[in-house]
Amino acid sequence: MAQLKMYWLPGSPVKEEPLPEGYSFSNYRCEEDRIAWHHICLNGLTSEGDEKGAWEREIATWPDIDPYKDMFFLDYKGEHIGTITAFVWKEKRVGDVHMVSIRTDFRGKGLAKYLTQVALLKHSKEKDLRWVELTTSESRIPAVKGYLSAGFLPVEYDYGMEERWESVLETFQMDHIQMLYEDATPYKIIYRKSKANHPVMGIGVVGAKRGRVFMEYCKKAPEAALAAVCDKDEDVLDAVRGEYGNDVSYYTDFDKMLQDPAVGCVVLANYANEHAPLAIKAMRAGKHVISEVLPVQNMKEAVELVETVEQTGKVYAYAENCCFMPALRKMKWIYKMGWVGEFEYGEGEYVHNCEPDWYRLVEGREDHWRNRMDAFYYCTHATGPIVHVTGLRPVSVIGVEGPGNARMSRMGAQGAPFGVEMITLENGAVIKCLQGLGLARNSLWYSAYFTRGRMETARNDSGAGETGKLYMTNDKTEAENDFWVQTPETEDGLSKLADGFGHGGSEYYIMHNAISAMFGNEKTDYINVYEAMDMFLPGLFAYRSALVGSRPCRIPDLRDKDERDRWRNDTSCPFPEAAGDMLIAGSKEGHREIPKDTFEKLKEKQAWARELVEERNNRRKSKE
Image (cartoon, rainbow, N blue to C red):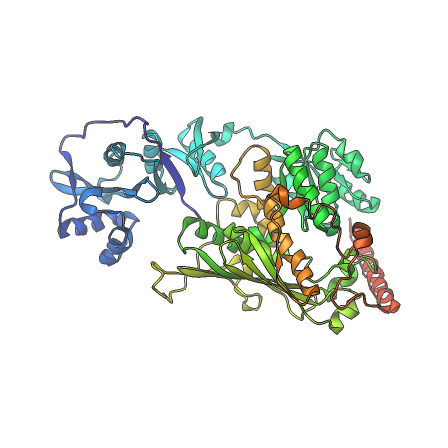
């Protein structure tokens, strides 16, 4: 779990208190001081037998640390009993308070504040300093209290930081404090846990089956309340009503739900190809939107969706859950910290053999959207995480479609069994993505190469935790090739709250971060409409590439208003109602005739499954 981060802002007063009798300060001078430094830090910052290693890791290899100028000792009668290092990251113009420790036999005397004081006095004399930062753990209660007293402010920079700081304030009985963003601009005033009064967002869920996980969030999160549920199936609504009661409003008409003043945010968990029209309608009705995958069907919808977000000012959050699985959250955090250098190459895979569940997924219907989509349409599980980790925009793509197979025929699906994208990003880096429903095994896997290392998730068949586990190699310089493989901890400040939510707890993060944005957190980690297009358009244009012999296709940037007119009326897609006269087949091989008995078999299997469910429900009711 990430440590707490705190900033001291230049110009803030430095509390100067005289040292107690017998105490004094000195600077690092010689080898004996290094030995004393290690002995002082044995209370948790270093360990026995690691004297040289600790010095190398924490002092000697840091290019901006000069121990003769930056390291201070607190002495008692001439003996070193405390230490602090105060240096400046020259490139960032940021001060750092580093390796703060009091020797074990002198702890509990309130001496750490003098170390902080000498560090801040040094930093206060630096010119053009942006801020002074430190990291610590909330378990170091005296240290945190001392930093707060010295004028340090908490920083919102990782998942769950606000909640963790509310608990810290409660521990110290501090009513409130200013919290900062990571760029040192003000975030908001936060309050201790017992006095925190979080606003509540009324949630309206569309699609009562897939939407159950979002309803569950409203049960557990104080910032959300389930206000309404909309579904065209009244039997499904009745089942939800039995669980959530009559305090929630139920609708079969989406337009009527939009008139409900209790609904501030609409969560779209309906059919994947029907999200954009509802999202547009909801935002125009004054509602924020959280949209399940996928965002749009074609370029016409993409342009209209982007412009609706801009015109209404409402939050549009794309719920690509793979981006918020534990290993991917950590991968993004490590990349943001600059530990692995610049991104050069990556791979993303989402392969899901859906044949065993196809009868349920398509409801036995030949015209179901899943039976019509091409192999690239459901692409953002593969493309999204690498795009989200790096923040880089895709600029061109080559698409290769796999040949048809017997599995897709048995399923009655028009698309190819898989598609591969070779995506070039704005910095020249390349991503290879594979997605499909018609290969024999499942795969959810990501790998990313950087100038100073590599990170990748565990493979499905490894039994190692898939996207819950991250492997990393990290070189100090680009000239190295260190074979030491690390497995960073993927838990963060929200992990325990997200435990039990599907897809590695990712839906919890999606809701938490999106609602935070709706309440004004400008820098929370959510996928906005532009990034949603950066994830989806590579798949849309990869299919266009496949249709013309896998020639490269440029990916439009819909941030550019001049780019939009070319695509404003482009309805090309495999879905008849949206495509109109620009309908294209679900595969480069063209429309395939599927034997009618294929769908009869699927319907029979679905009916059989429903009978089993009904029988099980009846048995449960009889026992009650």
